[in-house]
Image 1 (cartoon, rainbow, N blue to C red):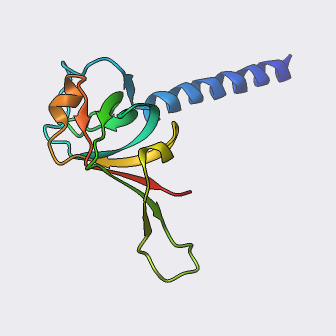
Image 2: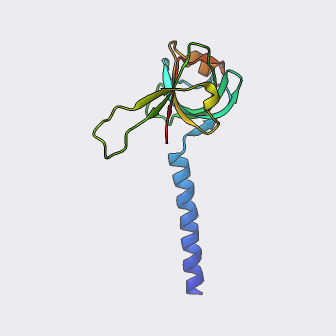
Image 3: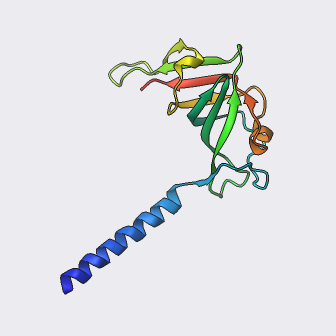
Length: 147
């Protein structure tokens, strides 16, 4: 009987630990408009994962900073679009054996991007209001880091 109680106690502790780690390490998921949440007032760029590409529109999952930096950031889905002036660049960093730190830049096209790619995006205009109101905004640059 003692071994069964010990095994049950270990299982309960593992499950409790997983729940705590999940709640502490994972930011809040919110795919609805962020109208009632105080996100940063100026957002010109962020890292994201591409969820979907439809024409010139990218659906991105990203962690959006809040005004109050003591609060957990919000993980949400945003939409952005590209135009002919958007620069899409693949960055290839040298391996650790080389002394250079500057990445090799290769200009690529939208068709070279895939769902699941991790990118960094920038916009010449402040995207905060567009993100808050669930509206698309124009991307100036997309950087894809080669794996």
